[in-house]
Length: 174
Image 1 (cartoon, rainbow, N blue to C red):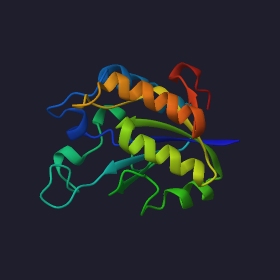
Image 2: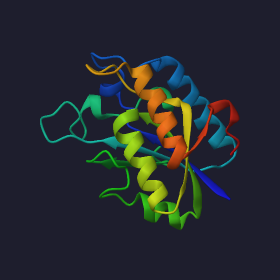
Image 3: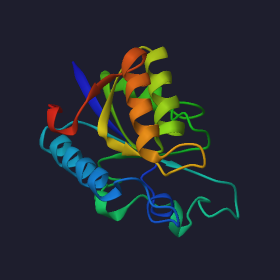
């Protein structure tokens, strides 16, 4: 079974913005390990940037829009693409590219748990892929209604119950 790693919205402006992601350093380290493991095992890496309208902090090409340099992604070998909606499949070529690469299992990591991680996992399952949500490699920020910790636990439980298979980063074997 062919697998791919999908990194969602690990962007300078979201990660290093005024609101810090919950356990951001730990999540980033887990994703970095998964990137290294994917490279070692020649597993394709897809990384998506959320793109805001011109003039917004995450407009295409702006400093905050860039993917985190710490991920050491390479446009020559990795597939980097942009999205304008929370669902990484909506309005993008992601499904077509995964099908062309014969990917069945999609390891999902990144930000934000309650928006882009959630909608992408649900959509991946609806499209016939097997999403594997890496439970300790996605994050978000506190909200007025819930702490980031509660949001992440809730999404792991909800997505893991019906839409994705939950795995910890230490259990990933590409």
